[in-house]
Amino acid sequence: MSYRANFTGVLSIDPPLSRIHCRYLEAFSQTRRVCRDAAFSSSRPDEMRTAAGLPIGEEGGFFVGAGGMLGQEGGGPMLDPGGPAPADVGISDFNRPPAGQPHLWCCWQPTADGGGLHIPETGSHYEPISWFTYLQQHFLLPWGYRLSGDIDYRGADSVDVGRLSVRDHTLHYAPAFGRGPLSEGWAIREQGEARLAAKDWKGAVSAFSQLITRAPDWPDSWWLLGSAQARAGQLGECVVSLDQSIARETDAARREARRAKLHGLMRQAGKAADALERARVLRAQSSFDAATLEYQAFFDALPTDQRAGDEAVSAIIGIGLCEQGAGCHDKALAAYFRAAQTCPENPSGWTYMAYLQAYQLGTPREAIESFRLAIAAGNDGSPIYNELGMACGRCGLHDDARDAFIEGTNADPDDPLPWLNLGHSFMALGDADEAAGCFEHAAEFHDPRCHAAALEGLAAARDALAKG
Image (tube, rainbow, N blue to C red):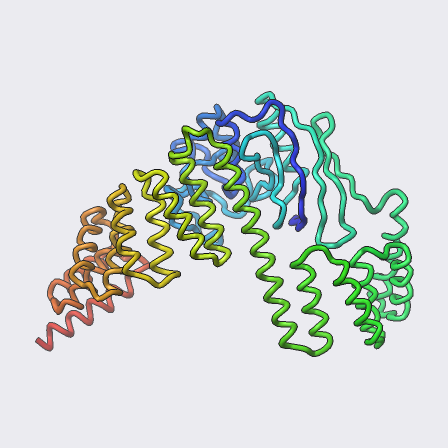
């Protein structure tokens, strides 16, 4: 079950998590929890699980290794959860969590300093209580940690508020409504919704009007009243009620979404579209801002002597990815450059900078330089040479492109993409004979990414040779 809510607060962990345990729980929450072949997965890279002293677990439930969201080597390529499970990642079922785990994603994450456990403030969260129990039983209690504290939550519905509290190792769920003196307001709301379901519009207006007297500051009280008034044909009163709801709404994205609905009701299509776009941007920005703060907190928590190492680079790259996702490309570029300067022997900063320049900024000449710096720093596999060659080709530097693709074929002779693109480079240079050989070799791999393009290129090369 997905639960969309804002969660505010942190559960304290006593003593704070060790660095090994903190890193493991971070990886656990960032890896899709899928059923695995336990025997196969136990033979694959899984440094953090091994360091934490954990077994592979039933159906590979404790596996967090290999870097990718689904456990693929090196973090890529991205796998299709709807397709068949490739044999080389050991996944037996993409869409079922391992035995005992409540969902495919764990919503709880440790804080950067290891002193607490929290749920990200925004997003969809799955089975928070069941996941807390699982983490307690399998990790936190066996490791000797004790949790305490409270987390407040607010759901998409303004009256869906309450608190999650830890007492005696148990997470208690305490909704503010449905018990105590405010339960009467909730009951009135249910009466109004029942009237709506029965298409008794006037009865719904009457019920929600009573709700206003009980809870005048709930944005949803006014919104529900306005919706009922619209159905009852009371359009003037409806606009007033919806305005009152918007004025009381504290969440900026939700406020703009409601404003869009109001404009739509008034047949103001342009204003409705503008408000919807503002709501979309605000939702995305809120998510990216929260993630940026997390990465910055992680960096700030690093000891001074570790702020020039790989973990620092990972944190800075994370900031860059958040800025890039939010559309702030200049800030993303600055973050990637900072990462490259922080640890010159780590190629990640130059690599991310090159991809941003090549594909989103549309500056392939700058990308060429960044790709070359990434290669010099140690990222010298066939994919980076392939990207360098394509950037050179877009700039008309076909000799440089050819040389880059040749380096790509040398780095990994079994990667068909450099062979395919080397064929295109030879065609651009007027050497159809060499191009035909490259296209033919690329086609021999029968790789679905490029097989059709290789056959098409081969036909074009042979046609050019026939014309002499």
